Amino acid sequence: MSTTDQDLNQHLASGDRGTPQRTSATVPSALRMMLALEDFEEPARRYIPKPIYGYVSGGVERNKTLDWNRSAFDDLALVPRMLINVSQRAQKTSLFGQSYDAPFGIAPMGGTSLASFEGDLVLARAGAAENVPMILSGASLTPLEKVRAAGGRTTWFQAYLPGDTQAITELVERVAQAGYDTLVLTVDIPVGANRENNVRNGYTSPLRPTPRLAWNCLMRPRWLVGTALRTYFSKGMPHFENMGKRTPLVSRTAVRERAQRDHLNWKHVALMRRLWKGTLIVKGILDKADVPFARDNGVDGIIVSNHGGRQLDSATAPLRVLPGIAAAAGDMTIMMDSGIRRGTDVLKALALGAKFVFVGRPMLYAAAVAGETGVRHAIKLLRDEIDRDMALVGINKLNEMHSDRLMDARGFDGVTLTKSSA
Ligand SMILES: Cc1cc2nc3c(=O)[nH]c(=O)nc-3n(C[C@H](O)[C@H](O)[C@H](O)COP(=O)(O)O)c2cc1C
Image (cartoon, rainbow, N blue to C red; front, side):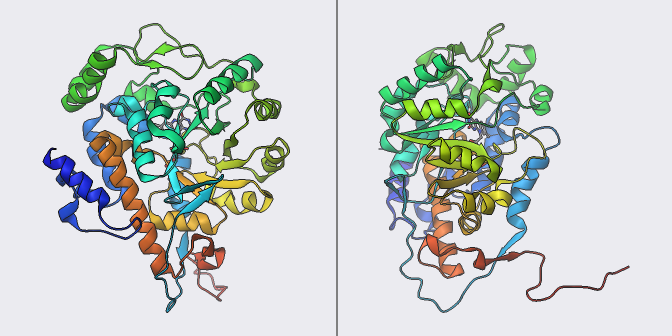
């Protein structure tokens, strides 16, 4: 066993789940300065070719929504309570009849195997090892059957579907056959987003082989050898495997099937509900007016999301609409994503009505930087932050997080300012 493997095993086995461990001696050296989720981004930028990094990190148009996803969290302050015995802290969370070791999971991301060798499998294995859910994207490059076999129970599947009965029926049957229990339908992409950053960076899907793309790949030799060539020589050309017609990742002429997504509507959700016996989740809801439709069509849970600020620019941050959606949810489970980076973000989302949250980009950066080791380290960091923050806020159970622990970060308790500076 290599020193790195030994380090990793020691590191990941150290301490009880959820007990903060900042003992740098047990952390593999490559990860020693990865102290928070945000720390993975810069090394990932240096590893991944520019067009691919731009695709992962980017938002849409003026990046208003991308920025708001973070500023919404910054607009909320936590108000801790003191002298409470917080020694019984626990963050195990029961969700759809399963118990997970943290109140967060890994959001679905297309093209993960482009940024990290076997990215889909790496994320699924890390989710399984740390007992948190990992949602495999419909826009992934690994057959969904293989990912479920690698990740098992903690692996969910996310579908992009056209408003077409046959396509829906075929996919639902395939996902059930592969043994998945949880199916997530993403609904915020009736058309492709206006991602100008992709055009500026030379990113296309499928990738078009151009001298510019070749140059950008040569500029990242570690990625070229460790991800691109390793993938090509071990598996051949990757294909989009789980969404319509099988399409190669790199092609001069191939076109990905995206027709009729703008036909998708609640009737198709009702159809899915009839076909799918497992847990059905809709991802991408932002208006509480949509909630009764989800409930009436038998949806089990909603992920409040703006797709990480990658679809409609100027769409609201999920955190701001979460309370209204949670109030309208009835017995549906409300989850959220977009902008979660810290344990305090998780606690704020739970205080506003989320039962669970998902993290996107940082998990992919962690996979690019250090594979499964990196993702497990990222999960551990966030779990440790949550544990520490629970103690500092003064709670033992996550369901003690209510809006009374929050205040306007720029407000003054009990004071309404009437004088203006004019
Ligand atoms: C590179 C990338 C690819 C994504 N692909 C998908 C996808 O295939 N399906 C989907 O529902 N959401 C997709 N998303 C959105 C994520 O599931 C999630 O909503 C978002 O990343 C959360 O925001 P965060 O990155 O700020 O944590 C993608 C996000 C990124 C960054």
